[in-house]
Length: 60
Image (tube, rainbow, N blue to C red):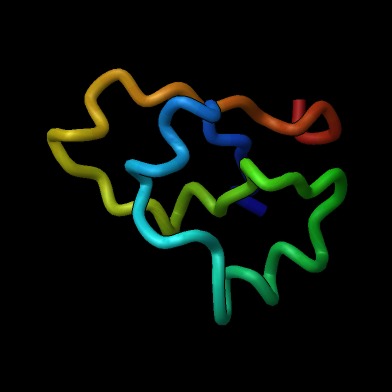
């Protein structure tokens, strides 16, 4: 999946928290946290310049 961890300082800027289909898809991901998002669901905009994301260990 495109599961990523959004840096806590950025989580409020990435749009609404995971819900609906995104939340359903995260149920199949491992090691989900409050900072988990699907990268493919984050709308890229100028206000995200410098966004810090980390990949779950199992996706390396």
